[in-house]
Length: 190
Image (cartoon, rainbow, N blue to C red; front, side, top):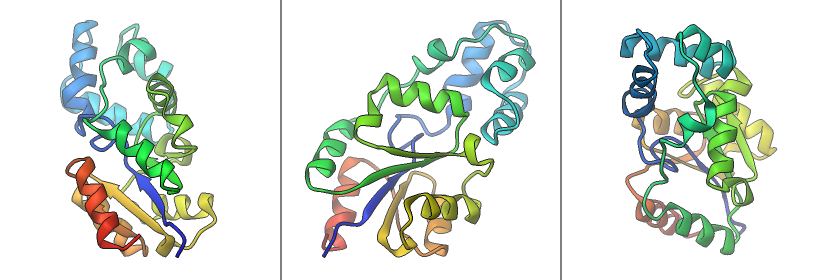
């Protein structure tokens, strides 16, 4: 039996905090003197993560001189995730990511952590102009992979995203920690 493709969310699975606006973005904006509330920052982030503005336009709209590299430096990887990714690649699992993010920040983050060497395919909401849990976002991943949804195992820290992946035919699991991915793959017998 061939190995399924393992699809991972970024924020909350690869990166340590799933609530990026509250944990990093709004505090970063406030530190630069932005007058925006957290709700206003979230609304602008959502637009940017749908590809409706670039990161430069986002910073300007927030009335700050934000720097993509300074901003992404606020993030850390989840404990044990690099070891898990190395294990999965060594075991022959193809890896990909499906994430809601601003295109430029997604690139900066994965380069910061050298994730592109392990996860060659990234489907980013800012590039496809669709956000999870939209069924079309999962179908965009299926299309990019050129595989039936049934050959993809998806992990996300947000249950609504897991349910949406199931709805399009993927096996999907709630991410708790790196061991939760190991257990889920073992339960599939792959």
